[in-house]
Length: 84
Image 1 (tube, rainbow, N blue to C red):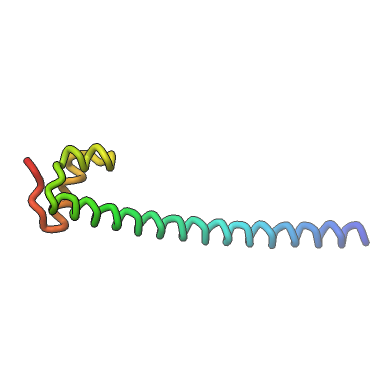
Image 2: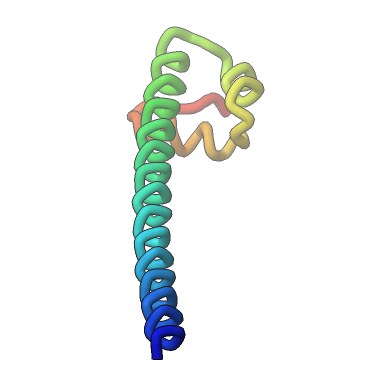
């Protein structure tokens, strides 16, 4: 029975290790999503600031890689009328 006990213990240990690895991975994913949300907010603030000082929308689009419509949405959300 020693071999069976050892195999059962090893299996339980691997199940525990897998669960812990999944929890750790989920925590890393959650942290990465939060960092992305903060970076997106910071970018939107920077876009609005640039528009306020007169940076052309085409330049904002070039730098960010956002579409013209996405830049317009960000500017409208910041209370700025985007270029036509």
